[in-house]
Amino acid sequence: MSTLYFPPSTLDKMAQKGITEADIYDVFNKGEHGVTPDAKVVVRKYNGYEIGCFYGPTNKVSFDYIVIATWKRDRR
Image (cartoon, rainbow, N blue to C red):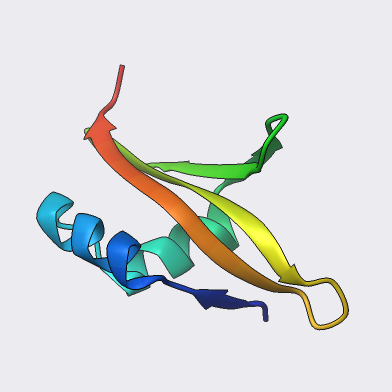
């Protein structure tokens, strides 16, 4: 399993949005992954809302990642 690192600023914003580290691990392990020009993205849809995050590699040997940004919004 990959290790995710959460910078303090990301943790603060997650707390404001009501997102926990466990939520992001669930999204990372069970969500739909994609790639943007600047980072990788993963999104998971739940009943009535979705949670997603942007992440980037910190170590290509051990597959550790840093969570850059997160969001939680109503499903469209």
